[in-house]
Image (cartoon, rainbow, N blue to C red; front, top):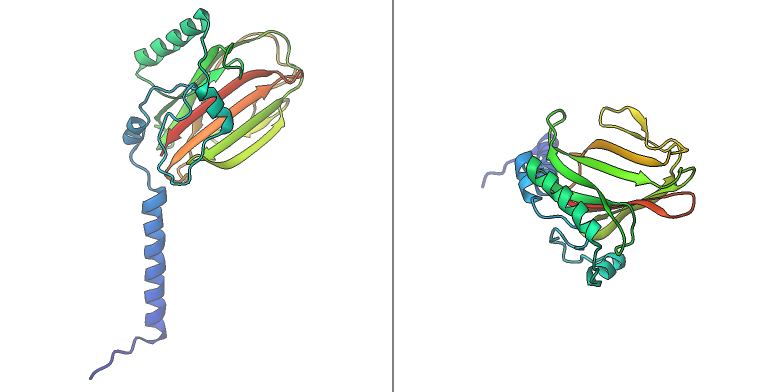
Length: 232
């Protein structure tokens, strides 16, 4: 009976091949995303903050946020002006053929809040993949001299990240690596309007991502309250 001797070099080659194959399999399973057009189609649903699950998660151990459960179980009769604001935003999305993945309100109180912004998903022509674009039109009743910025992120309905920072002077890095200031204080009272793009990182794994953000002023009152949900 003949025997084949692999040798140390052969063993190393086989181990390296197995290791590379495992990495490639993990990449295909968890990190290789569909094309941008397909991702946008996957997220083409009617987003509403009044629904706690706009996108279904396949996670077997998924759980819901108690705050969102309360919101879902509460029947809120929205004022007529709130319905008109929502109608305006929905007309805007329909006319532009935008896919909404998030909403922004002037308060976190479901009974009195007013819709002041939308977050959409669109193709990132510059960097590839997809990005978000947030439209905001809101009014502050007084100067904001202090406050906090809160963020809570969930992945497949499980807690992933949460933190908060002082609002005044808070900076971040844009998609080109440049540092920008989020808010300079005092932030003047009155009407404010802006549009902001953010790249959705290609390194994020496949799954459902939910982000809740709220900003408070010097009186601890929420001046903006937003939520987005998308799948990769």
